[in-house]
Amino acid sequence: DGFVEIGEGAVSYGAIILPLTGIGEVGADGILDYSQTFDLSQMGIFADGFEAADLFPLVFREIVLHGGPVPLGAGAGTGGIINGMQGSYVVGLPVAAGTISAPVPEPATWALMLLGFFGIGGMMRRSAAVRSTRVTFA
Image (cartoon, rainbow, N blue to C red):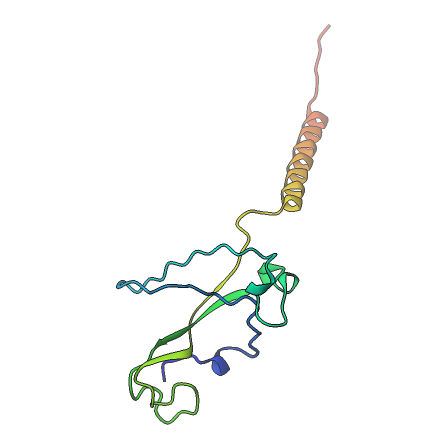
């Protein structure tokens, strides 16, 4: 029917740990610009039964936005959320998803990379010294 619904798009769908609130409106160009800072020490920002420790590590999390317009008749005859009877905005329809990635490598990653560069440099210097030959004439 042209729509990927929750049951079709994932083998399993995790619980909402940190609900996004105050998202605002989508602009006339169809772009949603959302920026939010969360104070993870405030317990009230999490969904019931969750705390900050449940959110980490962030690389195992993703953001999913729900809600979008569905024309009347779309998905007619199917048994999912979109079944041809909507003709309006459907709150439960997943419309966008994104993953969370670290903006910069962790300190341990930097340390390993630098150690590797120094190791390669040392090997190159040592092998160059072994290959050089000195010739002297008396």
